[in-house]
Image: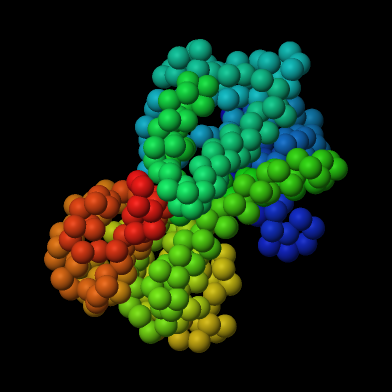
Length: 390
């Protein structure tokens, strides 16, 4: 049994660039297996791939010159960064897809027996190849959809005086909906959600399902809107200019408990603030300066060559208190637990006045911060200076 666990990035050029997944690595694996194998094998796709990729893998394997028989299974992984080991040892489900033929069903059973060593049988789902391949894309699309859905409501809450946390609690208490992924924020990031939704959009377009493609593409557009809305609010609340002002960014990773910066919302906010002429100081307990600039160049095409004084405009700090010293504002962009425990009286005393806090994760005690003297603005939270009937 051989597992194909390779990267399937979004294509950057050619047909489908910016949306379609590049499955070159999967094909190269299949060609290598066909070349070196001396006996028949069960080949398992672990990578997230477009539906019907297994057909291409199977055709390549069938072209081996030794007359070997191969079975191809789909077994997408559902591990999340920061909880990968727990997700492996105690998965919510294991999904295995294969051909519905005697040989295909036998291959499925072989993989089921491996997982059955630690996963209860009722959590092992078996299905056909195409359902398994598509399920991974759909799972991530549904999760991202929930984030964009509650984020769209956060904008309405800010305009009307409602509280997005209270909305999430009320809606999430409905057992038909549930409470997971209903926490409003500056936006989703990471290597999976955007890539997989764009892949789903491209698949829909490929099959002529333009309305379906437009529906899922709106999830991405709403996420982009939320990031842009956050940085625009920072500028507008700070007297419509941040030029020359020191601004502190707390958190650069796309979520807590990881140093992953792929598609992180922080990057887009930092880009916007730099373009506005701000002096940005970034503190994150796990992210390196090198990773920040590599991802900014790859995803945003923001480099020192095309953005004058880029490296001078962004300072990476090793201490949050130093990052905040002399700053006009703090923006919370990753939900690191340590951010809740800082001495904000000390931070306030060291900042320029008026001192602003923009909470993009709704993790701080806003009432306590206002008592200290901060002007606080948060995602989906009403501004008490704007409403007198809260």
